[in-house]
Image (cartoon, rainbow, N blue to C red; front, side, top):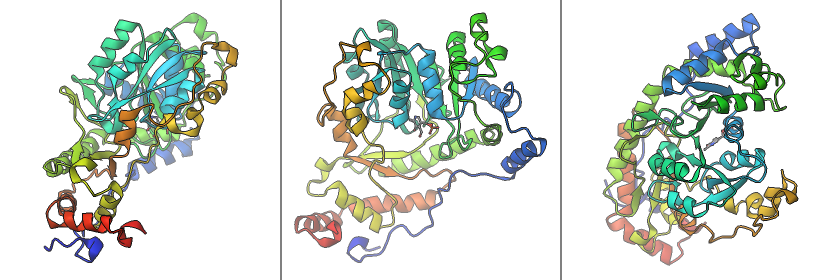
Length: 434
Ligand SMILES: Cc1ncc(COP(=O)(O)O)c(C=O)c1O
């Protein structure tokens, strides 16, 4: 194998077909959906049938006392925030590096997201930074187990208990992940999962809320699950609210039926993703310019919603992330920059006042700090966001392909090609800049 980069006419390193099709739906899912359609059972009713069965399966699997399916992860998050009592003007500490829904659902609950740093070593909430942002208005902390890597839940829970805050776990990336042998979503006060079609547990569209707290469960029911309140609420006064608060977050039985079938494979898929992820990271670990995210002792990753690495540009001075990506892609590696924007720098949240006024009368919080967010407000997060490399998630065993990907990274990031790439970047070679 020659060292000449494919970018400059050398042979491509990755030649095997890439198989990361997702979701994988089979005859069992088709039969389940068709069966319900033949019987005309396409509405939720009292929650019995596939929705109730999925909730029971989810509760059993995670060890939670209650599970309530929603029509999206966003809806489950809204119900989670409402469930823990987030109300007008309440602040919720949220990482800026997450999907929009983690913060948007705070706004939907009339709360104010307060954006926090994430730790570049784990890509999860920086708990010390979150602690510094607590005010008398702080109601809750939202943690997201990014890309299936479990956040430091001991630190989060210690902080929350010491300061009287609720903890909402956004587990949308991390189905099946555990912390000290407990499932994510059961350690905080409430957990929310997305079951959307790209997640490891697929309903097509759907979400799941889990909690051990009957009051949180009742509040979640009231927010979006009318028609079920009279059957499932624990509190009599809640049971009288038969039509709930007016949202409709009830899921579709066909989605539940798909997810019930998918559930049978969850552990197998997680095991496959884990093997592939560990194999790839072990193969890349000797490259000093790549930083692999750390797993906390006691945590087991799950879900593996994405594969992320950091490129430490300072270790390969002269090769920008853009040049690295071009060279890797030319070798056949499917690699990209991060697709999640940092939320504090998105137009909606940058203008804090507008985000706040979107749901609240401005008078509700005369003390509200409306200073717009600016670049530099979360320096650690903004820095690592520029270093992120995103790779696909491989579920079925792919070691020969992973060997080629590992080889491609080594070819580009070590040996003579490093100088070749540096020179090309220095002289502004069009192959890198067009
Ligand atoms: C971290 C996170 N939270 C929440 C959601 C929202 O889930 P849904 O798309 O099911 O509403 C997603 C979806 O990708 C997510 O990645």
